[in-house]
Amino acid sequence: MKVLLADDEYLIREGLRDNVPWAAHGMEVIATAEDGEQALELARQYRPDLLITDICMPFMDGLELVENVLREQADICVILLTCYDEFEYAKRAIKLGVKDYILKPIDLAYMESLLDEIFEKYKARQEENIKQERTELLSCLLHADLDKQPEEAALAQAGIPVERFYACIMIDILGYRFARDTFTEQELQKYFSRFAAQVEECAAERMFFYEEFQTEGRVLIVVSGRNAQQAAEHMQAVCRALRQDVDLKNEYPFLCATDGVSGDVWGLQAMYGHCQKVLQYAFLYDETSFLDYAELKRIRQDDGTQIAANIARFVDCIRTFDKGLIEQNICLITDNIRESGRYSILYGQMFIASVYSQVTGALKEFGIDLSEVFEDPVEEYRMIITAGSLQKQISGLSELLGKVCDYVHGKKGAAHHTLIEKARQYIEQNYTDHSISLQSVSASVNMSSCYFSILFKQECGKSFISYLTDLRMEKAKQLLRYSDQRSYEIALAVGYDNPNYFSTLFKKNTDFSPTEYRQRQKENGAAKQKKS
Image 1: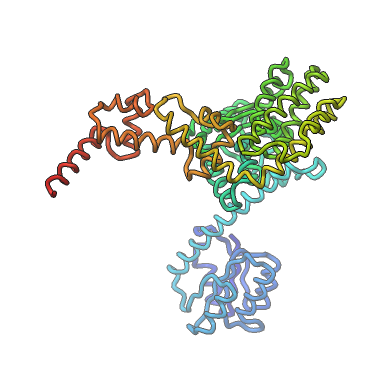
Image 2: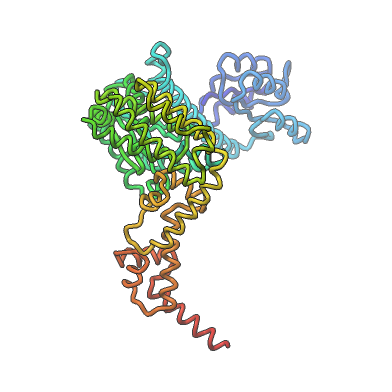
């Protein structure tokens, strides 16, 4: 940390330079000045990190010097030395942004403690600056055109070795597009921030670079290693930590995309692009999944069974009435059909007939008839299905679905509430079934599980897992209070086929084991009887 000393008294100026162990405090005196004008010239020449100056000096006083220096170098730290303990001096100094105000004669012990405090803050600021610079450079590497890539020297200065091995990991919250239409901006920010914090915690020990894309519901992690094996191990360790975080998977189902290892930093942009391609297939997944770009290429070369699976999942997506997502899915399925070489007019007609049927069914669930959306629904269908090419059929289908989405958007708030109530009734009727799951409940109301998960949490104030667990615990408490069933019988009665797991969960939720809870209830009942 560079220090400039300014004082018109020779003994004080040189005494400070010679008697303070500057190096021990991480500092170096790079110049001294005997008046304000000289100090200003030296500050311009050396750009010090810390200015220690007297107030009363010839030609330009200390306060005027500070004002000029701060105008040109806003991040400099300033300590004032003075013989005057006057309020007006202190008030003006504080207004200028002076760090501290030391009275003469100088207490060296106090001054040294102040230097330590200043240096720690300076070091933290420098580390943050380097981190910010590294973030900006890596972001540039990932997003900028090739002719705008940062220079190798700038990368090295920011601690980004060029000749090192790197790997990308991108995590996308499944159903985040739905949340953008459902949550307020503040709710969405809180939702994403919690997710990002958990992801960052999972990756903390291995992470080299981290970037958030809140509007897309995505997080990017870059890891590095001395060789390809170490970089791959770091990538696998992060993925393993994400897999093992049960709370993360339950609260925020996600798709994790990877793409091998690059032999230098310049390969990051290609890997980043490949991961983005992987995430285009997020609509295929309802639960937390991990997909590498190499696996994606295999899927794209599938013999046709994958197309059928994609279409089946797309049918599920229709019930979200998210125009952007539906459009994206149609494009991907169209590409699948084209790339497979299996397209025919009949194939297209069968696909459109299936989609039309699903749209009609989904609208009925919302209490809407297709005739409310279109003057003549049959004619709309006929025009699409008789189109002579895949492109014309897809364009017509996209237009039809777009109009349906626009119509539903104004009514779906109340409809969502009705569907969630229906789901809660289903849970009440089936909580005793140990196989009940997010997937089975969402299927009971014909929703995709990732979309249902988001809506359920918004309507009920808690996740599906938390809701089901709370319900089962309340039912278990009732049985413990009013029946003589044993603990393992109660476990089975409320939907747990593992009595040990039930006992552990019960204690976690109530602070008592089932046996302790029953005993306390009996004691409380006996105490009430005595009082009465």
